[in-house]
Amino acid sequence: MSSALREHGALARGAFAVAVLVSLAVLFAPPSDVPSGPAGVDKLVHATLFAVLAVTGRWAGVRNGVLAGLLVLYAAGSELLQGTDLVDRDASVGDLVADAAGVVAGLLLWRLLADRAGRRRS
Image (cartoon, rainbow, N blue to C red; front, side, top):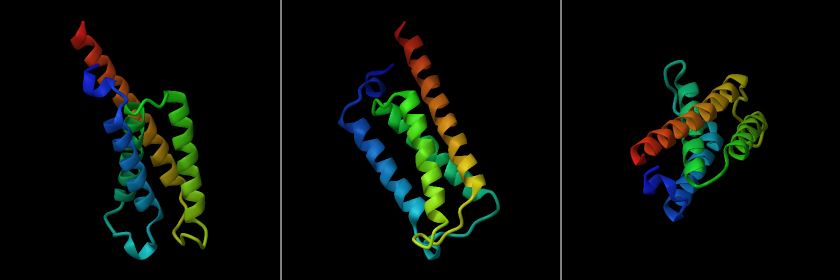
């Protein structure tokens, strides 16, 4: 893998931290701050958000199984919280499925990048 992707240094950890902060803002914004959009855009946002979390988490050095488990728990927890009066948004199984699909897509993308970089070194 190229040295930029192989290193689990400050840049990688910073990118993961930024992705986590963005996810907190997106997932827990008050309903009045959530823009409306065409049908399905919400699911695309969820999948993309969790794919970015997966890719940056792997870049930061978090192992596949640990990262996948924690991200799915985070997705489930966020949906449960969204259904409470605390966040006052709608909980959705569809959003949870999109989150999980994003995790899988992000981990597969990371694997693809790792394999490609490994072939370049050979």
